[in-house]
Amino acid sequence: MFLGIDVGGTKTLLAVFDENGQILQQFKFPTPQKYEDFLTELEKALQELRNYQIRACCCAIPGKVDRKNGVGVVYGNLAWHDSPIKDDISRLLGGIDVAVENDANLAGLYEASLYHKQYKKVLYLTIGTGIGDAEIINGVIDPSFADSEAGQTLLDHGGQLVRWEDLASGRALKQRYGRKASEINDPRIWQAYTNDLALGLTELIAIMQPEVIIVGGGVGAHFNKYGDFLTAELKRHEGPMVPIPPIVQAKRPEEAVIYGCYVFLRQKLGV
Image (cartoon, rainbow, N blue to C red; front, side):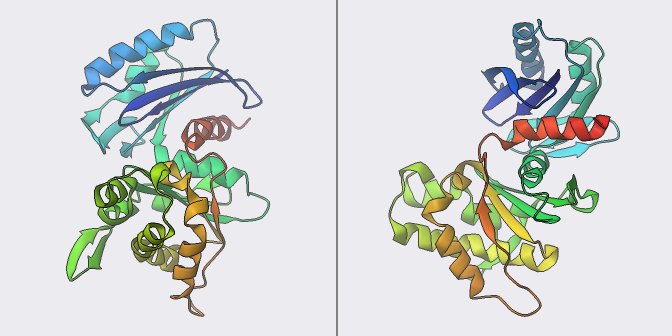
């Protein structure tokens, strides 16, 4: 059995997978604000899964990872720093191997695996509270971009430098229009939104030159409302040196991270 742990800014999800990638059981709890409290809640949650013989575990975190030492350096929306999360989770699991990776990378890894026969170079974009990205080359996380934080890109907007995720994340969308993505159906709003989304995406396309772009996350779940607007806006900036690739919605826009944990473990173990 494989265990995936998706540590989010508001909730933490645990899922036990069988050898074929089927989820056998899930457990969810609100993510505490203090790291020590998180470990306490995680220990309780693991008791709910004690009947499974876990072979390996992958933990997804929303921030920067020290992969060599299994340390979460920075956690985005969580005020945790330099926490030895690999060793702490391994201890709670009785010493089994634990891998720690950025959540956007894992989501991108899973979504790219669904297109591995069509595309070798995939750009994954997750749009939620912030904006995250992942670059998947030949079915694996590209180590050159493993620590990429595209949402922090500074863009010229109205004569001021503004972070991309402050313009085009789900949080920015709600701040501007007072509604969540799920509550917005006005095409005029979505068209205006895609103008800001395209500002940062054109930069990524020029750098990455991906064969396909997959959009996930909470806002990605509503891609059908703005996908055509986004493609049209990007095509306006297309040139012979920077072609615009196909843009598709993630198959599991809000569950890709936990499934990515399974794919990552299979790759790591070579099974």
